[in-house]
Image 1: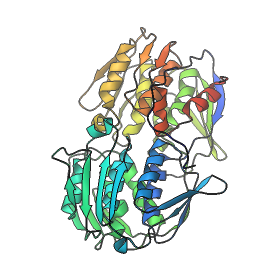
Image 2 (image 1 turned 90 degrees about the vertical axis):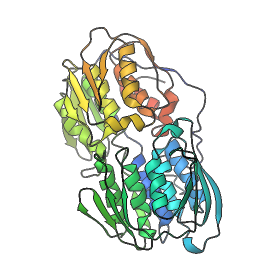
Image 3 (image 1 turned 180 degrees about the vertical axis):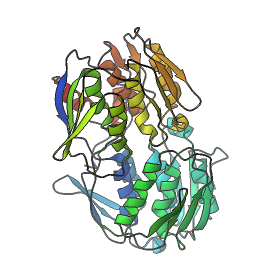
Image 4 (image 1 turned 90 degrees about the horizontal axis):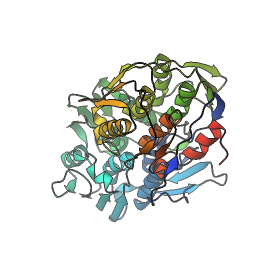
Length: 441
């Protein structure tokens, strides 16, 4: 499971399939990236080994594994290859000083989760990543570490690359941050906080805080490992100091990555079954059910599975998606094919993701004859009868690739510029897509 190589390679163009009939199929999704990387961090800081069942195997998770191993964590695949066995460094304070270099790739969870926990190790640790990663906002992580007494050298950039130098002990206590650009800044600090001497009382002081469900996920992961956490106010979190328990933990399927497959039922008509959809979850992808229902889909449970049905007609939508911006590319792709106008807002923070997704989606939609207008905090889309073939640029962004695939279901000749970018969170996307559509590879 840890042997696959997902380093960036030459671009891989892919002609997105166009289908003229209703579909009936099923899909089994890989594990959640958000849960996998949170559990990996907690396992590395735990007081005993952890077994993670059904973790995601992708570039983002591999980068996390490699970064934790450089900090002394042992991570091995089980004999059945469906689990990871994580043996932590049991005595961080007495471990020898480190001199490590962490490759974040383009993984936000690595660049924002690992620095706070790495500061619990004495030594000097440098963080860098892909060229596009150097454009992602990191100032909040850097300022947070400095406020916690960690030396950070970023040459004034507020971004990658930067080097932290720590004594290996973080006192913690009260800390204010502005996490308006990403909830990952909050989660990264909360995950490491149990190992701070005084724990952490963390307050967000910015005007907005996107993707709150991801913070709820972090809190739940901490609770399941015996950590005492509370949320006295909506933007105030308290983590008590203490041990993080090891144990056995199962990773849910990635519900955000379910989006393109659910969307296929709306675009083509017919039904799609997603295997093992959890009854209760902290994943933001659960909101696809209510959102796609308002766009014309119907849902039902079938045992452990979720079945979505569509009739090929898509309703436009007006929605604030601040709760989960990662859902936006799927919703926007569907809006391009909808019968009525759409307005998707509350997603200004998408400008700081793998690429500026608002600018990228607007540009690509208009390039193929769509009618998209970039807003201050979102995109407005009008129906267009002039959609046509063309190359859909991916901007090193996995969700740009899958958005183009959705549009390609109905618009012939959409060539995804580089489908290899899906390796970030779902390397098997093309094979799962073709299988759902009944296409022989």
